Amino acid sequence: MSYTKLKKSHLIRHHIQKVTSSEYLRVLILRTIGNFLIISSLLMIAKTFYLPVREEIRYFIDTKIQKKYIITDVRNAGKITIEQPKGLLAKALKLNNVELLIPQDPQFSIVIPKIGANARILPNIDTADEHIYLTALNKGVAHALGTAFPGEGGHIFLFAHSTDYFWNVGAYNAIFYLLNKLEDNDQINIYYQGQHYLYRVIGKRIVDPSQVEYLTGKTNREFLTLQTCWPPGTTLKRLLIFAVRVAD
Image (tube, rainbow, N blue to C red; front, side, top):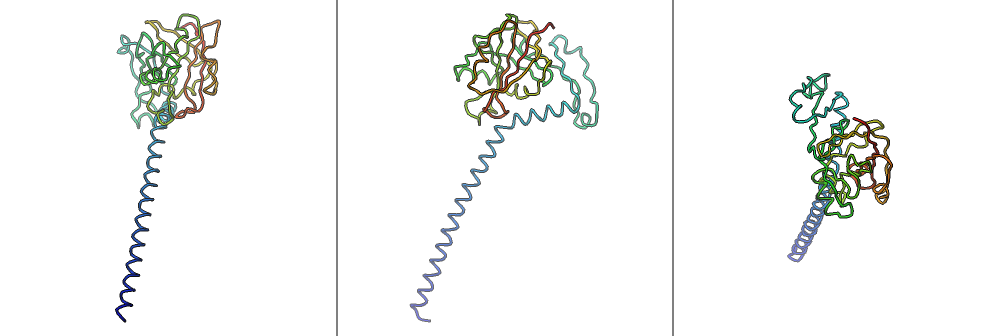
């Protein structure tokens, strides 16, 4: 074989190797970017839905073991005897059938035994100021500015689990994630200025975020509205729970 042919053959092999290396690098970069986007998406989904899923699992287990939540105060907490676990699931997971709920703040807090909810309430939160209400929702449940307080006989509006962007949902208080489990006649307890106020659920509704007329609704009796985002982990709709005060 002549020198010219050998040189040409070498150049052809070099070109093929160069093309192959270049193609491999391109594929590697595309795969890396693709894997990064997939992992980022999965992490975002996990961050968004972790709290709702966790709360659903907790509620499922509580239902299976027939768990009871008992409201008490610090003075009486030590006098209540906690039952030993009953049932195979409760014994296997070493779960108690009874749990005490001590109101987080006797000056203003909400306790809902059916869903094990217990949180302080921050008063007079401006629903029109995003910075103010997002800051409040990191700490507890917000009481809407301009609505009544317990005992005043008007409309009390409380809200939790709201966000600026859907991927930030998991960053806010999860106290109202299970509001959809409430049914007619379920109890909602509010503690305000050291007094206990009892409310009975009378209905619920799913509305668009633009339907703000529920915030300013008038009533001739003491009426309570609880609001959260719906479905859990999204900001698409709003779930409203309606309740009226009853004698405790």
